[in-house]
Length: 183
Ligand code: 5GP
Image 1 (tube, helix red, strand yellow):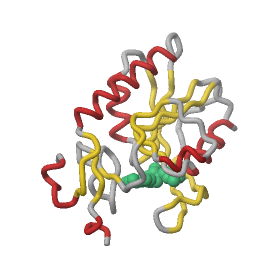
Image 2 (cartoon, helix red, strand yellow):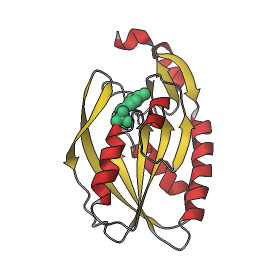
Image 3 (cartoon, protein in one colour):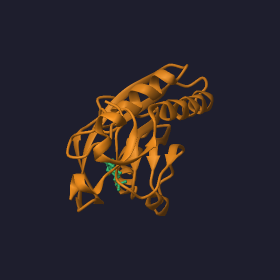
Image 4 (tube, rainbow, N blue to C red):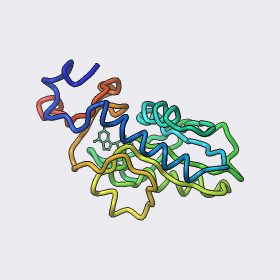
């Protein structure tokens, strides 16, 4: 579905699928260049990162391997607490590997900060982060995000893997949800 299919639910569109694809191609080029001669292991964070992972990996010109983690973050209201539970762990041994975590969105950065710490303890050669979207609050967390698709305002967005109550992940554009949907 695209933004016109759910026009009543969106306050405004932030990025069209064409804009997302164009930016992702630029990021993929950067990653290809930075990992030249090394095979990067992309670690996708389920469920939100499925679209980014699928498109980023296919926009890359070099070989990569992929693995997935599912985590749940306990939080009050809309903010996460940084207390994280691993629901599905990696199947790959990452010791000696170049790991790139692929995220849909970084908000406070608390979830990501836990994840980086957890994966770092497993002895990878390097660990970096790519996120499609980053919110201003993320800047206050001491987590280094190497590749950023777009910095976005502090509003609740859906589409391109990002959900509200499980829906809108299959929305190809990215938009801010209208208040009437969640109030
Ligand atoms: P953090 O620990 O960085 O605050 O939380 C990040 C997680 O919160 C994301 O993986 C995502 O699940 C959720 N999240 C944060 N902001 C948004 C948003 O604008 N839209 C959606 N759909 N999820 C969000």
